[in-house]
Image (cartoon, rainbow, N blue to C red; front, side):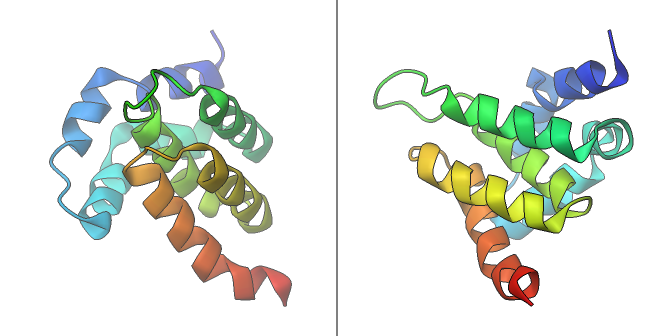
Length: 124
């Protein structure tokens, strides 16, 4: 297993999802996510291209009709990790996620914040 695969496993784990369940708003979600060991492993072990690919792959998985997106929290955490590594790539991945993760809770909120906050900065 590569270090990137180990990072993906940590971000997509039930343990991280349980920790993130304590979030009550976007700020608390981002604080919990950024403070997690899984986030640290993702930032240290994953290439920006690997994070983007994982976001695109997970966002394409629609899950069950009418149910919350199965990878909602993981996509949000990957976007946060990518935000510090590749701002332009993160904005593109966030825009993609916004169009694919309709019934998500955290991914659309994180993606929306990123598109809004990075939009002006990336175009300069």
